Length: 367
Image 1 (cartoon, rainbow, N blue to C red):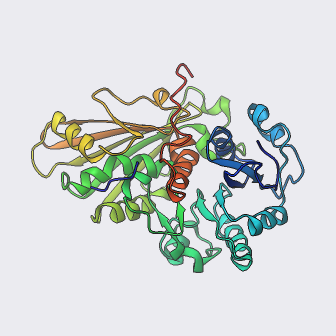
Image 2: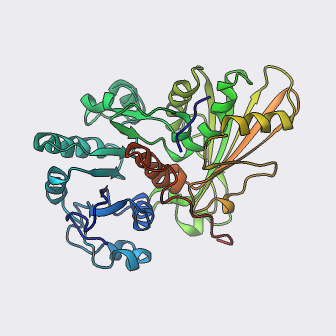
């Protein structure tokens, strides 16, 4: 088991001595969630929000719910962001740019910063740096990697599964991957199960991104539930790679994702065969021990509910066992713990801040 340590304008330095935060891919749901979290963060101050499609446009037009925090902020161009990064000695870059776009964008900005003698830290929320090789990435996403030379600079893991951060930059796993890994890595690391795991997950409509498609159109998704990409979802190889890195076990994940009729959240159930008889109390005790030093993990006897974690960086886990089979359930918010919140958690660690800084707000309830 690993343990873990315990004002705004566009393209301008923050007015205080806090760390300048840059958000890339600024008009999507994850970018909006990043901006919401950063608005209340005690150490990061948003210095630029990149949108090459809308430079100069008000951030509040894309995110009306953030108008109170970003009323005067306008989207910056790539050139403006690059200029900021080349003169900011302390810069935290959060990339919410799309898969296949993020790598080239990050590479270009980091190259300019390096030439100027500055050294930003990056957390990429896209899939572009989640694999250890360009070949592994290309096998899943079916196009060449945008910056293969940068891959060794990134480490992909959920924060709870990497004790000592010895990497320049971080790739945050996807939201389905985060929930699945939180439920399965303890089982594998502690040798409790055979290495074939069956995963069923349900995600909210925000997981499909902001651009409307049939799967997110409310009249089609409301009051409905359906599986998609059964046993062939592109997150399955990522889950296997991250589980192997965290546990040292080569495991097979049979993953079936589902679309749920809610906007935010993911609920995952992981089932596996126990290596030796164990009851529910024993599994819960093992989970609590594994995550004893993880402030965002809650292990309870009751079933995890999406509403209890919606909008938060917390993950709720529970389990059941019948001597031969174990089921571990995990509920997270896909936009927060599964994306923006996990990225802020990583960035806190990368800048030696308290891991919980800016992330302790609880769920609103009755969403």
